[in-house]
Image (cartoon, rainbow, N blue to C red; front, side, top):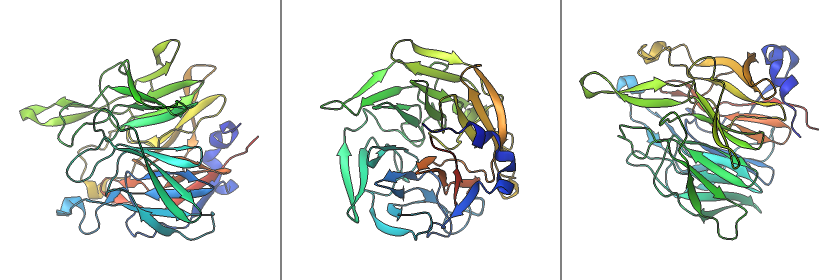
Length: 341
């Protein structure tokens, strides 16, 4: 069982304690937002994502999506490019399952996708196996595995969508013939860039961003703080709201036997600020206390990243790249250790 409580509550002093460690930089000077990431046979995989390789967006730069798959076989090793995704792709959902990484949905510069596939690093070769596609395209969704069931919720079905989705889907990976099925929609309306967690035998969805009509027909973002859990017996139930609206924190969230953790995120308070003067995202760690049913501040992150997966790799948890502030990615890969029972 993973015991994160003591480690994460003490993160405010983590630098002095030496808990945080920077792993080798990804071999891209910009780094990526929205990559897929997970672990296959002991190796860390990071794939796809997007960045601005030339000018920044406020200077007219163009966002570029990538298909490269990187592998790091040990924390003190060297990143290797070992293959390509089926296409340049980012902003999907990725989870480690068994000996591989499941990648769901995502987008490129032109459209969103319903594709689902599995990446396996086996005998120094990258294997890509198609899985049942989603019923419809989606990007910027959230997802997590509860037991052998993969849940996906929210997101956008196309780049110019005027509404965020509230659809929630499940895929039983243990079934003889896995097939996606739709469950009741997540309450509270549509959302994208929410975070997901698997905790207490349930699937959790927290925060995110809804799309609303603004002045002159402009689509605005509304940041959310509502939280819901779903299990097979009781369906959806509302849990305690986050202390403030949050979106795009690393997801799936880390969890232990007593709760789960939201690591920073975008609270929307700097929306409208010139991007080149954005101070960066929240560093506050929030812990949902399962026994008390409430949120507790649990220290600070050493680095704040958004639109990036959170990955368990052996005895460490990893934030591989991600967005440091709007339009700015980072090739840094950070990990924090925790005790394992």
